[in-house]
Length: 190
Length: 115
Image 1 (cartoon, rainbow over the protein chains, first blue to last red):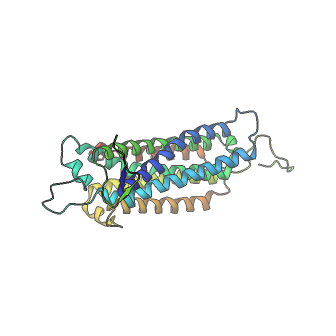
Image 2 (cartoon, chains in turn brown, green):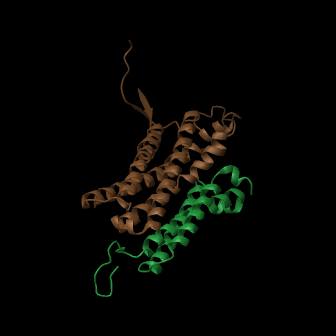
Image 3 (cartoon, each protein chain N blue to C red):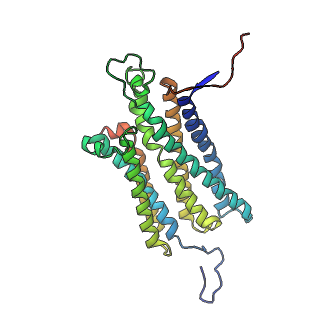
C-alpha cells in the first residue's frame, strides 16, 4: 500500500483541513445559536464560552490552512502545463479534465468555482471568531449582530461545502499525482 | 451600558455594536472584492497578468492577496472609526448580506460568463 507525496498533500488539504472544517461548522453553528440566543435561561459557564472561543480559533486555523495549502501547494500541480506533444496527461490534471467533453465541466465549472468560493470560508469564520471572542455572551443583547454572525457562519459552511464537493469530484476524475512514493505497508498475497 | 446613576441596565449590552459591525461589513467588502477581482481577471487579459503575484498559482494569487489586503484595510479603518460607537447595524447588515450574496453569485462561472 503506497501513496505519492502529492496525493498525501491532497489528503492533508481535503481530508485533514477541509473535511475537519466542515465537520466543525455544524458544531459551531449549534453552539453559537445556543450560547447567544436570548431565550436560553441559564447563563453559560465561563468555561463553555472559553471552549467555543478556542473551537472557533481552531476553525480559523483550519480554514486558512485549507485555502493556503490548496492555492499554494496543490493548485500549481493541478494547473501544470505539459510540454508540447505530451500524450499521457495523468500528471496534468487540469489538461486531463479539459481533454474530454465528459470531464471538462469539472474544470470549467468545478475548479473555476471552487478556487474562488473557498476563500469566503476563512474570511467569514475569521469575522465570526473575532465577534464572538469580543462580545461572547453579550451577543444575545445584539440581535442584529448575532444574526449577522450566524448568517456568515452558515455562508462559510456553504462555501466550504461547495469547495469540498468540487474538490472531491475533481480528484476522482483527475487526481493530483507524482512526487516520491511513500510506502505505507507491504501487501501479502492471500 | 450605564444609567446616569452608574448602575447597569438589565439586559443592556455591555459593548457598543460598532466593533462587531465593522467586522461584519469588512467581511462583506472583502468577499465582494475577491469576487470582483476574480471576475475582472477572467474578463481582461491585462488584469489577469497584473494579478499574477506567484507564477505557479497564477492570477488566483493576486486575486486573493489583493482581496485580503482590501478586507484588512477596510476592517482597520472601520474598527478605528466605529470602535466605541453605536451604529445603524440593520442597514450595515443589509449591505453586508447583499455584498456576500453578490460575491457568491459572481464566483459562479455561468454568471461570470454572462458579462
